Structures are given as structure tokens and as C-alpha cells.
Image 1 (tube, rainbow, N blue to C red):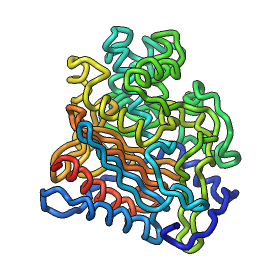
Image 2 (cartoon, rainbow, N blue to C red; image 1 turned 90 degrees about the vertical axis):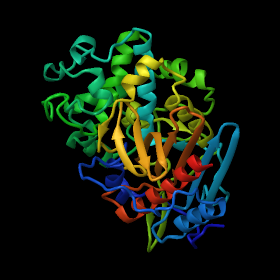
Image 3 (cartoon, rainbow, N blue to C red; image 1 turned 45 degrees about the vertical axis):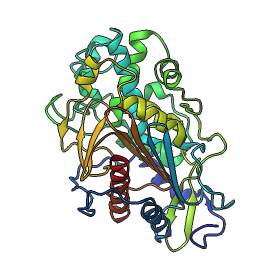
Length: 397
């Protein structure tokens, strides 16, 4: 049963088109944010308390219909869930349900790029001009390192009026993903490369294009060779269309007075591509973040470069605790210690995937509605506080 008397979810309607336009890879936010407020007790919360926190999330008037969290410690897995995967069927969320991972896909593009750095096919100081000379001359001095830690200054294609106009008219429009940067090709850099941090979806499109140029291979094939196969990911893909493979966690836009609107298949993944288009499952995402944060995909030499941080640099949406940005990875320092990973949000979904630096312990936390500082800061604050409690359970366990 649904935690609220929603009945059947309504289908996407024209009024959602503008919302879809700003939700392709998550909102672009420049505001600062404080660590989520949580209890000062460093003792790990008991399982019953964690379960109750999830129930309270889905019972909020603005809360998600479903949430699933997977805690992994070595060979031990604990799955917590509340609400439903689909308000029409009422079935519970499962770790094998497909879902949009939104900007957690940026960690996958980071894994590809750093894997190529390890193999000598790319270099962190290689520039757009070196590898992608056909891109605007104003961008040529931007390095791969600056793309990976969002200090490039590349203007964000997903905030361009041309892109937003297309998405607003047809959220399922199929883009040529390799030409997304053309929406901002006539724009200069927003700032001198390396001078400051500013999250931009264009960065990871450029990373994928550099990977393709350096190898002569499609980004999707590089994902399979360098990430999916080494980590045993069997339910992860980078689609171009709007369909999700069954079964999937349905994602919703929440209207407290009217109920949820199913937006699971509202937007084409082609408009997000390497910046946010990947589809995975909680099970696969757990395997990914354990390997990625734990160093299974790159050498210690490359990992030392990856784990160099910019204080106060936020992922989107902000994760638990205090955030610092590395190379396609974030350090989330909570009251109980640090974990490493990435967050993401898009229409219908909010995601966190994080693990300890040895990869032994991990958390994936999937919410079936989008949360952000602009659309619902109260819900986001609560989600972050609950995530921190789960991190404490992970580290204390």
C-alpha cells in the first residue's frame, strides 16, 4: 500500500515540461549550504531507528513515494526500504529495480577518464585544445583535471536557452549527445580555468568526448570495458531514449495537494549522456561505488591525484555533512567520519552513492522524487540528515 492515499499516479502533462527542462542533470546552484543538522551522538543508529526515519520520509506530505538504502560492510548487506516502487501496483522497492542515477553518472565518466590516464592514453594536464581542437578556441586551455573537478569555467549547456526551449517543447526530444556542447559554443569561459569551482554539466560531456578522441572508441564501449565488466555491473547502461528497463523504481514529481505525477520516463537520457544519463540499480550502484571509491579501477598514483580536494565545493544536490570536491569524486565528512562518492538528482530521483576509502563499506541511498536547494530545501535538509545517520550506521557498524 502507498503510505499516502494517492491512488493512481497521474501521467506527465504539459505543465511538467518546464520542470523537466531544469531537471535533466539536476539544478545548477551557486548558493552555499551548511552541513545538515543531526544529532551529536557518534554512536551508530540502530536498524529500527533507520527504518523509522525512512518511513517518516515517505509519510511527509512532500515526501517521496519510495526510498531504498543499501548498506554494505564486507560481505554483509543490509537493505532498508519504505513506501513503494510504484504507487499503482504498491510493490516495495527492490535492490534490483532500475533507476536513473542522474549526476552519479559523472563518477562513471571520471572512472573512464582516470582509467585512460592510468593507461597513458590521456593526461590530467591534457587540454581541450590538445585533444579536441575542433572545440571553441576560447576553451582550448582547459585541462582534463579542471573538467573533472569543475574548475574549467565551461558554460553549462543544460542552462542555455536553446537547450531549455527544446526540452520545454518536447522533454523526450532525442539529442545528438556528442553535439550538446554546441548549445554554448559561442560563449566564452565563465572564468579563468582553475581559478574557482563551479559545477557544470558541460564538463563531463567534454570528458567523454576527450575519452573518445584519445581512443577512437565510443564512450559507451569504454564504459563497458573500463567500468561495467571489471566491477561486474550487469544491469547498468547508458540509454539514448526515455524508456526504462523493467522492473524500475518509478520517479515522481510530488504535488502535496494532488498527489504524485509519474515522471520516470518524462525526459530523454540523450540530453544528459555522460553528465547524467546512466540507468542502474541499487545493487549495481553498490558494486560500482565500492570499486570506484576503493581504488579498484585505477593505480595508487592516479588515485592520489583524484583524492586532492577543493574545500566547500558542493555536489548537486549537496550530500551529507561537509563536502569537498576531488576529481569526479566528493568527500562527505559527517559527524561520524568521511565517505567518498557522488550525489545526483533529476526528474523523479535523488541519489547518493558513497563508500569508505578502502571500498569495504558503502551506502547507496535512492529517493523517488527530486530534491534540491531551490525546489524543496526543507525536504533536502531532511534527506541529508537521514543520509548522515545512515553513514554513521555504516561507519559505526
